[in-house]
Length: 376
Ligand SMILES: Nc1ncnc2c1ncn2[C@@H]1O[C@H](COP(=O)(O)OP(=O)(O)OP(=O)(O)O)[C@@H](O)[C@H]1O
Image (cartoon, rainbow, N blue to C red; front, side, top):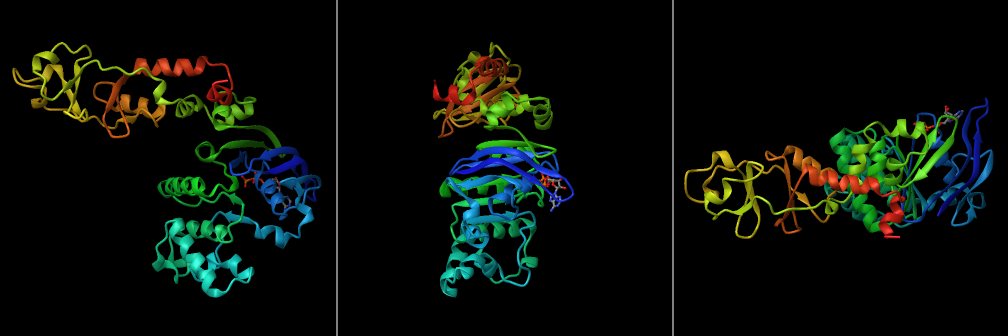
């Protein structure tokens, strides 16, 4: 665990970059620092690897003051990734990645083998090993930056806006891969961003900094969205925090129904009085085929003969959130969302009223999200 104990940083000239910050960053988890520009996020991050020395207070790693280590020695156990990757322009990709192994005096063969293994891990083709950074896209360079930080398998990773310099699509890909990697590696990560959505997506805990280096709130994303500590945090996380909260309400909490669901071989007569004007048609295996409008059914035959409107997207009742289910309902021609199991078979249908019920239930639970999850 990384612990900040009353850390203050006052720069010459009087700027207070950190004001008595106390905070824990738990082992194996992602702690995200967000906040206003100039709020002290980068300064706080850099006190961990001694790129910045606090004016007062202490930073501890597993109970030990970071000042007990020489900076160079300390940094070998701490990966560091920055915006624009900060690669050495005249070194090949494999040698960039192997920077720390070379410093640790690994032989060249072993260091390069490690670099190749990491290239695969972060989704870079081996053919890029001998290229130079300028021959890679921005997103690829960021992957190299992550691979380089991981090279000596440090238990801690500090990441300062690592995905900010790439377009939104690449950024989302990098975030997804980063989460997948963390699922395997369980590093202790401190991640700086000014993007609230990125913080919510990646953070196990989010620390919000305000101008003047004040830490205003540290909480899980769920709690931050549900209970911002003050008007500054509420304003910072935005007016659509209600919508964002829906991502943390499991779709499984919505009631599902089998109303107006028919197999493709059911006679059309059975579909004519569908309450909502639409029937969901499924195959013999209960896989959803499409929506049939009651008004557009053929005069006779089976519902499978009707022209079916596409379902759009379904939601996974076990893994998706109410946000995904609501999106599916809004985009569905019938206004109803189709819930499926892991095999893609129909689990049930939820209309917007059913989803409202789930939202109201979640909103009515006054316990902090963690306690509610524990069932305690
Ligand atoms: N070396 C320095 N000398 C003097 N002042 C500094 C120095 N580094 C940072 N500061 C000041 O300290 C404050 C905090 O800076 P810091 O870079 O930690 O903020 P930040 O939250 O990371 O901001 P941003 O989101 O804009 O990157 C700012 O007012 C900044 O101008």
